[in-house]
Image: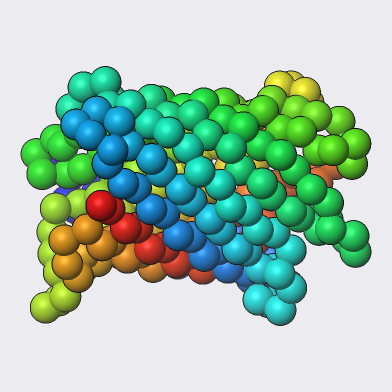
Length: 216
């Protein structure tokens, strides 16, 4: 029943969102590593590098690690730290980011649904006013496997709320394909429409997203 809806929504995202956006294109490359310590505890690390201005300008990166606890089969809690650097114009600025998040994962009629709710405590080292940000992400991965590689389509949505500014500062909407070439490895290639605020105005960026998830 959901199959036509997801397929149409994915195609709609690919073909219509770029037309809404400005000409700027960029990329976001992600590496996630998750390793079990025992039946309940695990460590998780994620790093990212992003570009803009037709892929020519690397303007953001972060790296960090956290500790997680599996409350139930579906729910887990994580806490961690990330060090980020970003370049709004010419100068690189530093951000120390601690976070606390809840993560939910389950399957419904073969569809894998995940929801992540995260609070980020953002220390800018005097570069700008510190902030607390709430992020909520939903991902829906279809059970169908396309081509001999068994590629699986997905949809994702994430909204960002700033408590300092008391407003939504950014929204990500995307879709793509995931591939599991072997146990413990998941690769992702997709498109994201990045709708973000600069001052009081919103801007758009088309983003090519790649990801590698490693599980131990």
